[in-house]
Length: 294
Image 1: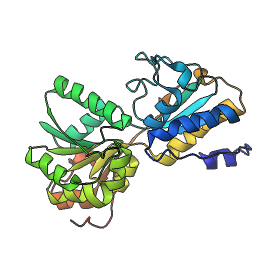
Image 2: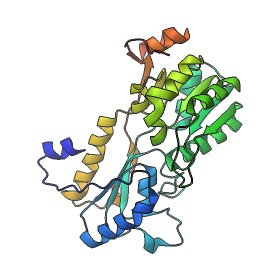
Image 3: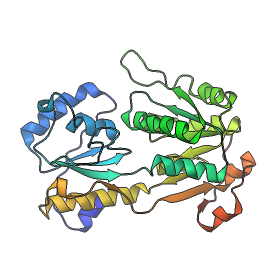
């Protein structure tokens, strides 16, 4: 995002604020936004975006920002999260970039690699990105006839997720006959993926499917993903249209990248004794790296 604006020689001053998964900090951020009146608000992730703009059907619109342009990135399902309406109609001050492939396409990609009757998922119940994706998985499980086995991270008394027992939950998913472990676009899961979640899945012989590039980089077996750098560039391109092109956010479509990358990690496939079908080598991006230790 930054490098695109710099390359285009667009003079911007960016003020950074980190919610750090603490929703109680959001009202203070909104007060600052109203006081400083920036030209554009750039939000990262579903929970932060909802904290700034609120759901489209909120009964208290005065609590949120509606008179300053907002551009979001790394939002998995803006309509399911109610950032836009169910029909996809945009609100006047909002546009953005979706970084996750359609859930139905991800499920099809998993089935093309290894057909399954049971899908495991581990997620944070307080992260809207994950909740909307899991809701979509539930719907698809009914339509396509597979079982969805769910586990959620534990929360402390302040509703913050805890890593306690994460590896055990992966083992429980395997014991419950899950044939894949789906890794949703979950920020907290992302912090545990490389050192805890994926090693636990490997140790239990459970293949992992990544919804994001970050989770592929953490060691997942396969995934249908967008390049984060490209997502940032695309978001900055839309920001440029607002800042210098003077376009209204509502006139700029909310959309994903035009192409996704189907990635396969060969070291994980070898260790799991689960090599991809030969035709996949014609279109998948093959990642060769050192074997992942248990």
